[in-house]
Image 1 (tube, one colour):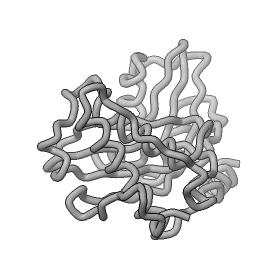
Image 2 (cartoon, helix red, strand yellow; image 1 turned 120 degrees about the horizontal axis):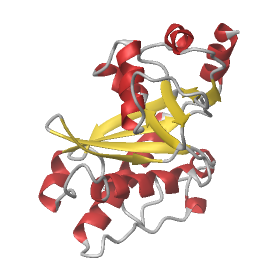
Image 3 (cartoon, one colour; image 1 turned 45 degrees about the vertical axis):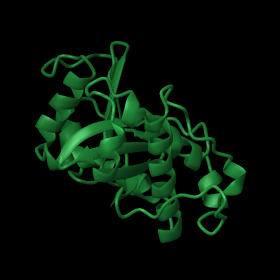
Length: 218
């Protein structure tokens, strides 16, 4: 059963073309510049109809920012309730300004940023009776994981496996992130896994985004 679930989770991920990936990186960078350069943190105006159909689809995404290898922000959405291009712009702005773990990104930093976009496949519930079954199911480096219990929820992207390669540690740290005890098992716990289409680029190498330039759009 778990093998079939893993195959289904993997099959639900649609990969973007190279052109679409480049466009989303341009949009993410433009959203960061727009918000950081304005005192009020202005959001980039995006009309999804100006973009390719694949970027108009409702999909969930996260944007992660690094500067010289240091995490500078990560924000996104698990719910696919808006177009991918709009979700990417909104997540990039939030990662730059509203990750409470860090001070907001400054204009001086923008050129040094590494922008990582993760597009989430549809999360699937993992039917396990105990955490040991969960540990056997998880594929390090492949599965992202969401935990919900006791009215709390948290998510780890697959990239977190780079820092926490052991499944037991991965799960314990995710529970801690949610504000749950890493050692207790909660009766109402729901685990969901997902895969991602992920790509990244350095701000200094991402082509400038021009509102009048339609070549990177539909």
